[in-house]
Image (cartoon, rainbow, N blue to C red; front, side):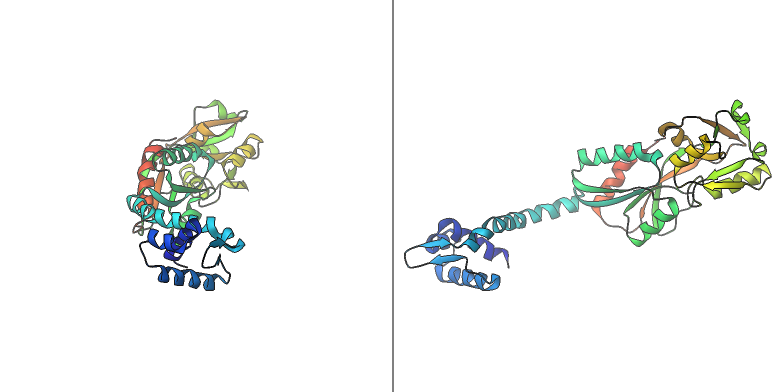
Length: 297
């Protein structure tokens, strides 16, 4: 069913007179009558009862009147929606991010999108550790990723928005907690709790630290995310690597956070998106994300 048929139906339904409806539509009456008959045949129901003296809506016509009006209104809005989309004022962006430690920045971004680009739907998908998020981004399941990665595949574009310090998390009553800075060599005998290997503080970072300290790390448990990792550390299961943003944003009862010597490379937080993605809404969200996330820890 085309929009012209819907407009013809609405005119007849409101005028209840084919002659007046034809004048309103700037057309002759016979083509209007044919359009209504064709519409009734297409829908498989009579929409009007008509004689030479009067026209009334059937129950079927009454039932479709409001949906027809909505259809016409939507058709009138579509050109403006397309114009907004071309300007980056409308559309959808699926954002993946890894841990609760970036929730504040993501919340700031969501607020900016709602305030400045209300026509954009920002879909948030959490628990996207870097290796999983990069795979989903490259497959088209995500449009934008906030992740802590040092190397970005060549088909992706990225921008560093902040840097975080790598820290040691240990129970407050641990002997090493009395120090402001813990040497990597002093961690040789410690049991470790780790995040998944694709995370910024997973086995890859622990491996680098152990090389500097001259030991093989003894991993006793893996945690799915930072909140659980801190719970395990506070329970005395082991020590762990974590981030300055975790210290700032997550509850950490019973946890001491300490710097590590020698100083470790900072963890870079990046915005990552597909290099050739032409979605104007994505470009708009990336610009707002720079503002919401820059320097966030």
